[in-house]
Amino acid sequence: MASPPEPKIAPGGRLAENVTHFVHALRRAGVKVGTSQLHNALQAVRVAGFTQREDFYWVLRATLITRPEHFETFHQLFRMFWRTPDYIEKMMEIMLPVLQTMSADKGPPKAAERRAQEALAQDRPDRDTVPAQERQSLELDASLSWSRAEQIRSKDFEQMTADEITTAAAAIRRLVLPAPPLRTRRTVSAPQGRRPDVGRMLRRSMRKGGEVERLLLRRPGTRPPALVVLCDVSGSMSVYSRIMMHFLHALTWTPNSGWSRVHAFTFGTRLTNVTRALAHKDVDQALAVLGREVADWEGGTRIGAALRSFNRDWSRRVLGQGAVVMLITDGLERGDLGELDREAERLSLSCRRLIWLNPLLRWDAFEARAGGIRTLLPHVDSFRACHSLDSIADLTRALATDRGMQPVR
Image 1 (cartoon, rainbow, N blue to C red):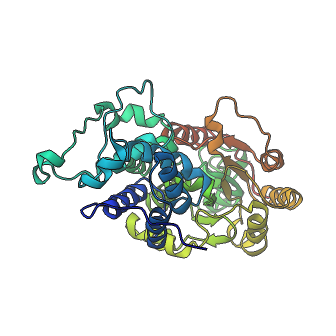
Image 2 (tube, helix red, strand yellow):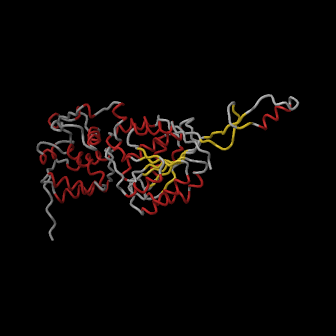
């Protein structure tokens, strides 16, 4: 069978350069694209041709995108990156692709659109270095290039631009998660208490010939609890888990936070202890080490298997003396629901309190329809959102008002 004819490309064309810049913009927008995928995309375009915009769109999407959650980002980025009046001719002539004003678009931007706009804006050439005849105008709405602090607080992490995520990460590192003290069976001397301090009164009476001068009392003491965090790093939780890693690092290094110890674990298809990675004081170094150690980042989800590994290998080491467990996941289990039910019940019985943070609670019409969510709900003590700065601030206020200080059994 004869091979299909290659498309005729102008000698001075810059198709490869334009596709390369498009891949760079995808990476800045949060889409992982490797060099081999770029090579395959260039080969596919040469074989399939680009006589129609729709064909070119599907060729690039088929070769560059590997995860369904990145389809919307690719769509928005492609729409802005390759939108020119004379598409076929212009893409061979202009030096670099540019954005055009989306004056016809009304209302707020769609999901991933702002991140795509920012990724493209970073790829703009210096206007002084581009000849006037090869330069195209770029006008962006100023409201899309910056945001105020009060707007960021209520915005979903998934809808933030790269700059907004950086701002949110810095803000979340300043939050303090209070640790409700645990009431212990061991008593301490106190001006007001329910039990007499017999030993202390006898020692004082020996100095005065056996006379008890006044009644001394004791009350139950308190101690700080330990915090254990199990964070889902699967593909559907990618943005939220990265933000929560900043939060965990801040908890680890915040002086006088109230927690005796902070243990952190990640899970997708396997369980990984990242406590030592977060022990690096510099947050960038800590996240770099964490990225090297977590091999299943943005992979699948096996919550039941991860909880089974934790209950078997780590629960006795880190859940002693009434630790608080924080489970961060969307609950979209792909494994056995029976195993998830058993391991979640065992985990809830081993800790003082099990707090579930779920980003899906950002939807007002949220309903527990997924099997994993319905299985987990009966075993948790608190069910809260973690999709924005406001939701995490609500969590800190809820822990600050915790009155349930029961004796440790």
